[in-house]
Structure formats: structure tokens, C-alpha cells
Amino acid sequence: AQSVTQLGSHVSVSEGALVLLRCNYSSSVPPYLFWYVQYPNQGLQLLLKYTSAATLVKGINGFEAEFKKSETSFHLTKPSAHMSDAAEYFCAVSDAGNQFYFGTGTSLTVIP
Amino acid sequence: ETGVTQSPTHLIKTRGQQVTLRCSSQSGHNTVSWYQQALGQGPQFIFQYYREEENGRGNFPPRFSGLQFPNYSSELNVNALELDDSALYLCASSRQGGYEKLFFGSGTQLSVL
Image (cartoon, rainbow over the protein chains, first blue to last red):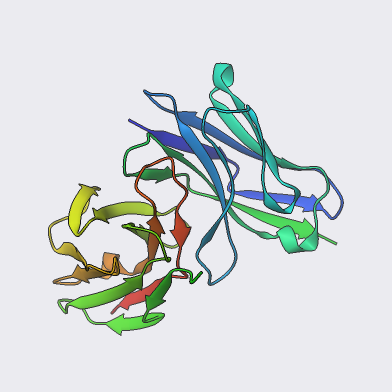
């Protein structure tokens, strides 16, 4: 069975500070991993995805994530937070079947 | 290239009623998935349709049903609405394959009173 756990339902950072959102996964097969962002009253938008190529994945808006198999982690980072980064972030795993399993989300607040 | 569109954006129903939600997939996509997102939770997989056939289902009762049409648009039907069905319903389209990224619509906010 596939699942993801997002540590920290709420994260606050100062504008310009490092953003680190944590995701650990459980998968019985090599996983496909994703980070999505959701702005208020909108659907989910893909930030980046890992599909067994490079372990460091670069996404949109300056975000990146590193796949660490030994730690079963796929944490999302951004060197310098911007006010526009305030949103809900979801980690998801897929087993290349037809179902995505989403975490419960992390709400990012950026303090000016 | 058109994105995923869902209608209506908001809906209010009473317990026991039936509801139909609609989704137009992104151009070039043949797979549609439906997700339920309760307040404060991540999206939960309801089912997926590929070439007009159900191609996987999550842990939802049979009163949740769907259709996919030849143009790859889709409907989600929910019968005998319950209060717990109140949620944001998200439609996502993709090319076939779980490793393909999902493109989400903005969702339909369903309130059951």
C-alpha cells in the first residue's frame, strides 16, 4: 500500500528565509512522488515530480525536492520564501497505477 | 490548450438528494480521476475513468458513480446525499499512467444540509 505523511500541518517562515516542507512516503514498489500546491479556492497545481531519474528534482517557482530512498523522504525546499508562496502544499505518491495518495497537507505562511 | 473545467463551482443540496458534477478534461487527455477533499484534508481518490470504463476505485460506496463520454468529459453522480459528503470535489485529467501528472480543475464545493 502507498501512503505519505507530511510532518507539520502548519509552517511559518519569514520572507526571504528557507522553506522546508517534510514528506515521508511508504511504498511497496518504486514510487512516483509529487508535490502539489493549492491556493485558496483553486485546484491543485503540480510543483514537481520524481519518476526515478535524478534524485534532486527542480520544479516551478524555485522549488526543489530531493528523493532519499534510505530515509523514504521527499522533502520540498525553496532557498528564499516569497509572500506569493503562501498556500497549502500536498505531497503525493503513485505506484504507476491509477491512484494518487495525498498527504494531509502543510499550510505555509510567509511573514513579511 | 484548454485546462480542466468543472461545473458548477458551488452547490447546496439537502440530505437524501442526488447530485451530478461535471468535468471537461484537458485537451489530449484520455483519463479522468475524481477526488474528494474534505475540509483540512488531502484529496481522497474516488475513481478513475479511462476510455469510458471505470479503471480503479477508492474506498467509496456504490452511491458514488461516474461516467466518461467519448470526448473524455466526465460526470460524478452521488445518490442519497449524506452530511459527510460535504466537500470540495476535484476532477483531474491525465494521459494514462499513474506516473503522469494530474491536471486539476478548480473543483465543485458541495454543501449538504
